[in-house]
Image: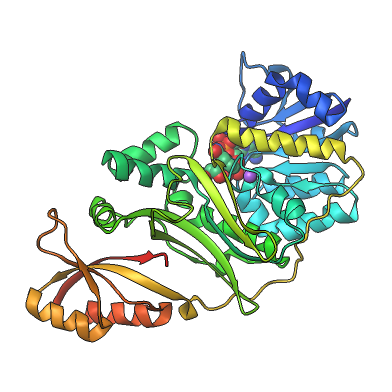
Length: 412
Ligand SMILES: NC(=O)C1=CN([C@@H]2O[C@H](COP(=O)(O)OP(=O)(O)OC[C@H]3O[C@@H](n4cnc5c(N)ncnc54)[C@H](OP(=O)(O)O)[C@@H]3O)[C@@H](O)[C@H]2O)C=CC1
Ligand SMILES: N[C@@H](CC=O)C(=O)O
Ligand code: NA
């Protein structure tokens, strides 16, 4: 038998207890030992809940119990999660976590401590919820040199964008629904401003490229400026708008970014809707592979946490190696990356604006929708991010323009 503890009894923590209870028999068989929940740590009381008898508010009780071999951290936030997790590892207890904030910031260090002590720090649930992606990168794709990872990595924003596009619902109504379903972060700004997807692509890039990719170096835009009219234009152009997180290796340099992006029906991520996430990986030997499933929510996320607990139980006193050095990777300047932009403007006069747009961008393709007769909208030719940004600034400052309403990238 192995005693385990769970830190946090919220959406994911209660899911972990539910999964361990529901599938107890098969989980124990797969782990090779009976997994017993000895403690659940939370700040609140849960009278009448299944964990009443094992609930504690004192972390020291857990850390000082030599029988506890595996701890699942599902509280969220950097502190006190970091202090608790580090203490656990230093006390030779393996840790599994769903906390991407913690992993993106301290993953390399915590993996190193686990490696030095022959225990494990596992974090499958931190990216793509229940979708296996960390383990494939660490174990199944080790024969490959990875040169691209592109994903829809945030369930909340994909849920919002899908509902806005398909049902015409407004942003705040759908965000509220995502919160009610337990998909959103405690502070949903992390979802809608792209920070969560940014941390996740930083984790995947660090594992794929073996060096520490600092999430703070990644260019990040969220979905708060995407409107129903942008969606209507996208539809007219034959595109969907998705929050893509991408990292690509070009000539030995890596660039990474998170941004709402128009993608066509032929793109492998175009049919990923609702709370589903998907991660598309290109390797130099395997070619293209894609991972798909529910990226958020109580049970899908708990599925990954529990699978990590089983792995940790199967590998007591044996480290499963992860290739993520503490050495920081310098990312390529995204201004060098090629893009095409979709741009909407309110012109002073259409005729003059037409000439101005041509002078600044060259040959653009105009697009019109009935709902926005006063505007002009167009797709630019391909250019570097740096050049396109300069051109947008020129447009904004030009006397023929009242306003530049939207700028959205189009995936090549
Ligand atoms: N929800 C999801 O779909 C997914 C979540 N995650 C990640 O999993 C983690 C947990 O998320 P989720 O379950 O949704 O969050 P919740 O807020 O629902 O749950 C967190 C729980 O931990 C408790 N807690 C917070 N701080 C402490 C502390 N210092 N000591 C003891 N208990 C504490 C909270 O108590 P209180 O409420 O009183 O503060 C709460 O009960 C986060 O890192 C999140 O990003 C990852 C993938 C998917
Ligand atoms: N808030 C996150 C939860 C999972 O990581 C999301 O919506 O994807
Ligand atoms: Na996962």
